[in-house]
Picture (tube, rainbow, N blue to C red):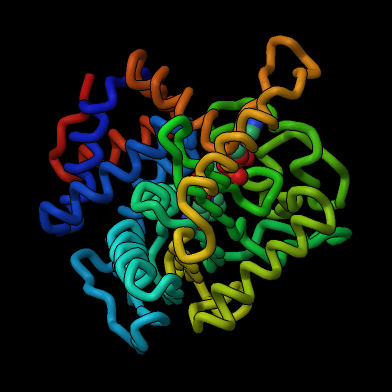
Length: 349
Ligand code: NAD
């Protein structure tokens, strides 16, 4: 299925609204999912609605939830999303942090117990567009953990993502580094499994600890594991995300959450810095531009694969998918159409 993005957005909105979300929440969630698809991250696009519907039907995702403000000193706040839509409450938390950083130079928000916050880059983008530097550390608690620590063959983490955003300049778009600490995001294993395609080398071990490219090992009774990226370095960063967003923020941890009762829970530690408090704005921007040009001037090892800056692949994917539509694999589409049927929603043709 290749679907024009606005038609897919309207369809996604109807599925979200089926859970009882008010129009503003519906629009934010649908938009977030479509923007993830547009940026090439189908793992965090409309396919996630299968889990969201499962969770709002089970009561582990609570539509129209407002966050509880656990504490707020003006520069540091802790919010509890209480299983409300992460896309809505994480956005509000980051907007709070932007305003607080504008006033005080830096702000820290700990977000507890949000239902899935989706593509973390969304929040980095919001901060970078407001001229802020942002760092987001996220943990995930949802079912048995699929990601093994370095040297392990048993899961101990979920995909604990990190996002670091640097504001754009007049010449350049923001730098947006946003990735899972696993070799691949779990949703990408789901997409490959649904599409019957192999995974890249070095991402999976089967149950016995042997390397494999077969995504089905993650869906067997004797499940395999996903490896962390960058061996001990990614494994260390996964642990740091777990502790920063779990133990330190006070959100559900991979160790203590007992899904499926919990659905998909994200904790997030966000640090937002107004860079103008650290350095002269113009010289900083000139240095960022110079740095980007310097990195991109490296001769490519393969002439067909130019050197890119973090955030560029997503912008390229977005332009292409706006022009040509979003591809949804058959299994995911079948699942969405089945759900739509149950709620008397007509799927786009
Ligand atoms: P990925 O492996 O595609 O890496 C993405 C990052 O690498 C981006 O910053 C991108 O710009 C950069 N990048 C990619 N190719 C590049 C190149 N050739 N040159 C320079 N930079 C390049 O992403 P991923 O690890 O699969 O994560 C996908 C998404 O999943 C992210 O948006 C992440 O936030 C999200 N995620 C969310 C959760 C959650 O629980 N909410 C969990 C895991 C992942």
